[in-house]
Length: 242
Image (tube, rainbow, N blue to C red):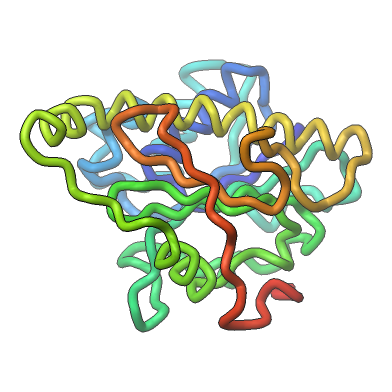
């Protein structure tokens, strides 16, 4: 099994660690942005890593955890989709109203040469929640407009206050770790579908949402998951972005 992780915020880095602990040694991690204090909550990065390149810090961490793992940061060397068990994970922040990604984020188009048939697990952070897009081929990945439209159609989330706010802040790291564990299982399921010759659409979805549904994770409770319908009505990116 081979996993390419594009974007290495704290949750994505924790996902890489969980995959390693599940025996996945073929890890290709890519994100030159520096580690920030906000990335430290899940434990994948250490305080001494702040300011260092995310990919360099994560490679070091993965090697420390399992000497058999030799992670690289070279998306151009990632195997093509003809090799079963290959999965792409893309993690990014919420796009701005003008369509731009957050500071430090890298446009997916910057990773040239990725096989358009690769299944991609697409993660989007927004206002304290995480939107997990349905698994689709890389060529059909969502654009910022689709992500923004889908988030706009979800039920408004009331900001916690009082003891609820204290719990949300207190349990934030635990919630992120729990979501990373859940996502690790989903990525393994996507790879298993590939190894078994399943179709490219709808890998790794639990029965509550099913293929074609997104998942929205909201803290502090790990089981607080809703299943919004993706909105791709504003553009044609669902047809092809290869």
